[in-house]
Length: 561
Image (tube, rainbow, N blue to C red; front, top):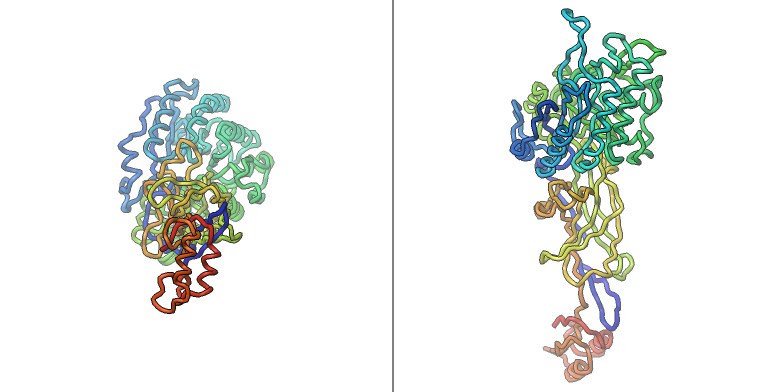
């Protein structure tokens, strides 16, 4: 179907013809998309820095079989854990800062982003029967705060390739449990108000140095509750008000990582209530803390790893007896998962036949339903573009995303960009979103243009790079993938052509409807068969043809004859 829009402009008639509606097919292809999916963990020790390997990043960012896994995937995320061994009693050196900066450069060059975590120990040490006074080996509060201050500049300068940052620093692996200085619930049975306050002080410092558009992930849901509402906050406090989502306040910037998900019914203590000074005992509280986490992760980042297969068969594919893993991931809005651990769990997904679905649906996965172009004002000065997009993934994007409609000339150059007011972070999992925007095309040069949707990274250093743009999982009705690999844009299936109106009355083909054309028409007036000057295609030359010419008389135009 085609339509004509006309408007008058200084003695000429301009027109726009378009393919005005398109519908799309969904794609089952597994492909990389930024800030989602399976990740690979790459640790380094500050005392003996092992720089990110350009070769390894090249392997991981393409389809590969993760270490000891039985499936293939590609990584746009690398969990970079920096173990600050040897710095528990000393400030960081320039070499540490420089090495970290080099890692960021390599990530940027190879089209990936980092999940960043710092820890002082990557093993569980502490008291033993042989050494009851043994230390876990992390650092005191003041030293942690000093190190965070030293890291502030390099983190701010490289926020473009930081997908998210984890609280870290406290305890073994930076997971906050086995610690010398922030309260060890394994010994005392609970955390005091002072313990929670010290942890919040570290979280506050990280929120201060990380730019507002990025989130900090905490290991347990209760950490966010205590930080927002105070040390004695109960586990029954409500999840974040959706009106605060992505506003930059603390509530909107604290997400979660679960490094023992799908491992047993309480994920090995993830849903513990660790008490406070007025409630000196730790108890499991999955009943309150898991729904809290579920509701929070609609608008904050959630990811992690599995650590054991003790929750079998519940952590098996939904297609198997007792399995519910896809529904579990969907309920918890899971954005990313470790590709290399735990393979007892992921092997079951391979055997059960759901690994491909998980590969596709981790994080967001957008599909176009339809796109439509109209001229509601009848002027072509302003056209209206609408499209419907469906998120069939487990989560929505958690970082800002630039959204533009781009009109690209069909001959390749030039192109014209139109930012539109919509936020993909609100394109919720399992939901369809209709977007309508008005585009002012009054200054668009004549030509034929194809419409594209560009979901680009808003960071200037990355915005032109296709590997950092979001690919939509759709194809046009004739089977053409909407994704343009070179530009990182998605075809919307609609085309518009702008130019002078064809003038059917330009009989002498000189580009002007004038007296010479009128004389030619009159010379054929009254013709009843094989009429050369029959403008309205009714087989004769009569008054109706004369009216067609008078309606175009004086126009400067492109002849259609």
